Image (cartoon, rainbow, N blue to C red; front, top):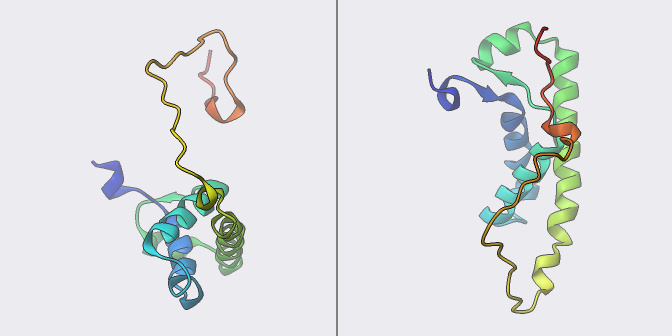
Length: 121
């Protein structure tokens, strides 16, 4: 089994459908579309599935409409970040590069770093 082949996030499909609309294709270049996809998907809860047809046959239409609406809203929110991109106004600044990563193992994990399910004791 290869996860990248056998399992995928269905929200990627829905965001891709939104970004395939002429209003996005005609107004954004390839790099900006990729940025939009990343920003939109970061806002959405993933829906991992194996086969689209099996998933869609069991999914109520009302839920599919909701997921499509979530994808459209996420892309619209991401669009504001691309349109108002701070990187456009940068001068030739030198990026800060850390030569050694330092991790403090005593710091509590952020909410998104904690496992959703805890081990049974």
